[in-house]
Amino acid sequence: MLARRTLLGGALAGLAVPLAASTEGLLAEGGFDRAAFDAWVRIRAGTGAPVFWYSEGTVRAFPSGQLLAFLEGFDTARAHWPEPGQPLAHQYNRKIYVFRDTKTGDVLKGADGAPVPPIAYPYQFITYRLVGDRVETFVEQGAGARLTRIGPGGNMAVRRQGRTLVFTAPVYLDLPIGPAARMQAFENYDFVVDPEADPGTYVLSWLRTGEGPPALGGGPVVMHLLTRRHERFADMPERMRAYVETEAPLWRAPPADLAEIRRLQAG
Image 1 (cartoon, helix red, strand yellow):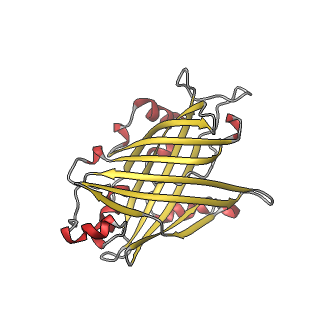
Image 2 (cartoon, rainbow, N blue to C red):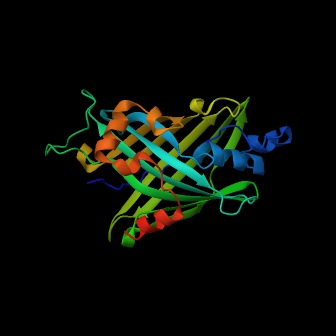
């Protein structure tokens, strides 16, 4: 059974719209212009064909720093522009992250001997809209009575460091998970990209602080992932591909379109 936990998650084949020199001061302040917005969508979700952001990292107890598990997985996404020419874009994606034993590298097992369920989303539907110099984000995830809509968020920033663009997206989560409980966590995404380089050089550093999975003992943990973009499922490490092919074949590609997402939302 694939567990659904909150991990918000999230492609540039060459910039279609160049970042003009006149935007550098604006970018240094963290704001977006249209060229930066178009670049962000292409970097994150591609131009229509699927892209894959493969990740490896750790789960550590806080504040001790004890290593509890390795974390391996990926986010696969595709972009759609519902109103061509307008600064509005959709991202259709799935993501799955597997807990691995720190000694063997095998899928981690709990005290009952059963595999620890992965963090797995059958879909996420994200909307990006440029409003002034900010990017508004809206996220939909879950199904049926557990369908959740988050947004608008407006904390994303873009900065230039030499030829490198750094897109930073902090996420503050405070969501109900029952009649008397809440899920509270902080996540931060730093996409570090040279727009003139091959997309295979695009990297993301992701950090999350919050409550850990019960199978890892619960309590506060820090998760950290280092992520690189791939253009094909076949380009990711064999171990990750083998897991998906045998345990989670849905995750071989992102949702095809919004109609598929609406079917998944209906449960």
